[in-house]
Amino acid sequence: MDNDSYKENTVKNLMLSALWMVENGYSVFANEGETAIQRKLIDTWGVQSWVRPRLDDGRYLALFRIKARGINYDIHCLHRIKIGDDIYEYWLMKVYAKSWADIKDHSVFLITRGKEITAPRQIIKKSDHFFDNYQIDSQHTLKLPTENLQILYDIEAWNFPKSYENSTINKHQIAIDENGKFKIIP
Image 1: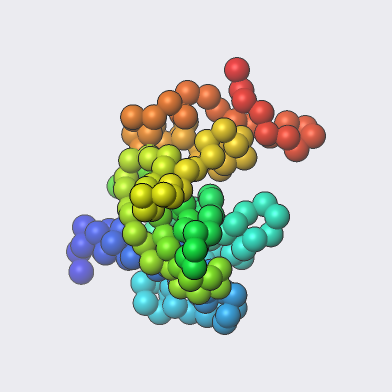
Image 2: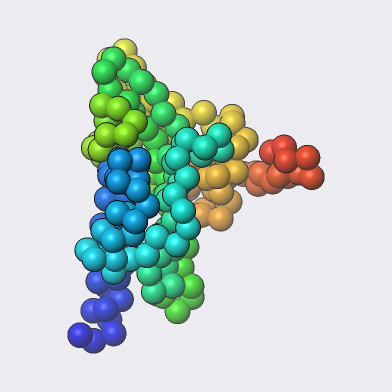
């Protein structure tokens, strides 16, 4: 396999594994443990989970980090609502790459639907461009609370300007002060 094919396969495998993490990572981690996730990622896509997943720990609803060949994915569940029997979530995948990996840093935005927290999810919307709400039905909308400084800090819109071209949320950076509080940098 030539080097270009290897790079293309790595990029494709990272995206496939990241989508699998959004749909199944929470469920597999909660029901089978971290080792099951690691085995699936390595055996199926040659991708590593490089830090322990964080699920509903008081800071993150869900956070997974995977990597391969100089490309890292931070996969966040940013917001969750329950409507009827379904749980809807807003997910963000931040893609960082070393210069030699030949891929640009960018973000991917997803909406999922599932029956319960520890069940698999179904991706119902995926976009390379930021959106802050998703119309679920005629009466319900999932709205990302973009006034929440912690969410803005996690999004890091200022580091991914192409992904936020049609948005105003990348106008300010958010930092954590010495007291652990989120603040807007003037």
